Amino acid sequence: MKLLVFSSEPLFPPFRYTGRVMSVIKDISEVAKGMGITFKEMLSPTVVENYPDGPGVFKGAKFQERFRGMHVLQRDENGLEKCVACFLCAAACPSNCIYIEAAENTAEKRVSGAERYAAVYNIDYNRCIFCGYCVEACPTDAITHGHGFELATFNAGSLVYRKEQLLAIKPAQLAENAVFNKAEMETQRVTSG
Image (tube, rainbow, N blue to C red; front, side):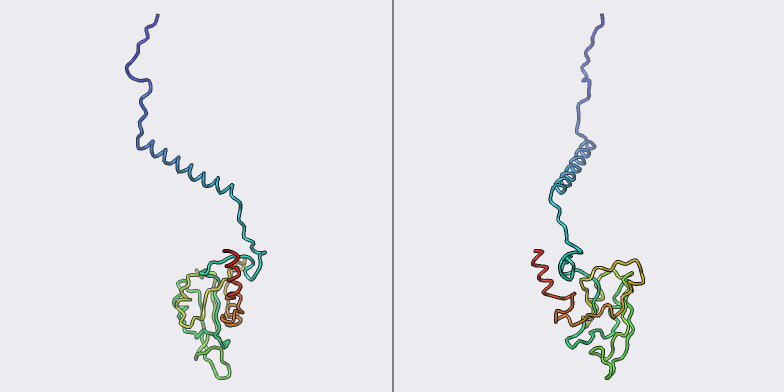
């Protein structure tokens, strides 16, 4: 016959909440919170933008008012270029992507309202970071950010935009320019809000 001896010590040591155990419990609770958000979003309906088949100039894309898109060289109220070739935008550009060559206005050939105009105005979008320093530096508000965003291409050479590509067709206040058409922007703002 065997004798059973009972010990005064418990078979398992008592469970104590140490710092390590508490950190594991906190980690598990954070993962559970994150998974809860994920599952909630999985079950909610999907909201889809109707781009590129949407209505209007922007093809259904919605922009914030401060969106910095492709640059636009503006014209004044007489239809002349606002750029006076002061080179301040090129000097302010941190990525050095603006190249300008100035020329003198003559009585026969008047391009801008000042003595000089930009005969060559190139922006290399391979290097541009859309910081807006050129827009802030311009004293005549000749260069602005438009809402053009479709700049993707397979050819890096086609990302060097010339003055002819950047120049606005008509003055901005006439609302003929697709980038600054206020009626289109208001319609888009009302339908999105």
